[in-house]
Amino acid sequence: MRVVWSEFAEVLMQDSPTLANILGSLPYELKENYMIEIGVSNNLLENAVLEGRVELLKFLRNRLRNDNIDFQIKITEIKIEAEKLLYTFEDKFKHLNDKNPSLMKLKQAFNLDYD
Image (cartoon, rainbow, N blue to C red; front, side, top):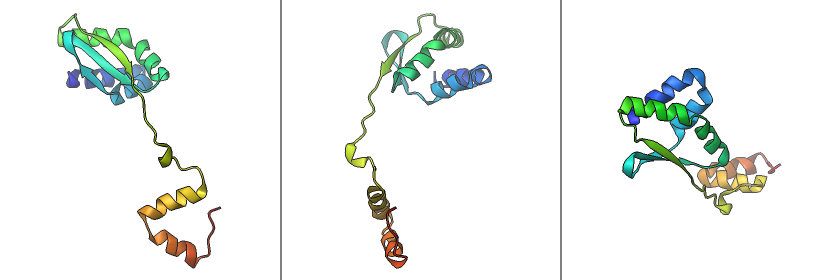
């Protein structure tokens, strides 16, 4: 099925590259009774997938020779940890300094400020 999914994205690239890129990047899983579950992170992606529903199902059913194939969309939450969000210049510098301690030496050597 993964090969056919990729083929559809390639065919779709000519007519609708945006939808092709979306479908190519979304996770999907084959469930019971030939149900494909497509995970999206927001309503915009859901609407984009629903716009291409007819073409997608027609292609999959034809290439896989199975008229029972259908799909459902599952909106998944993306968890963003508040502590990982970097708002201030100081937070950004500390984060980069943790990755590369040489930054502190440069900051001190050139008497630099966060701004």
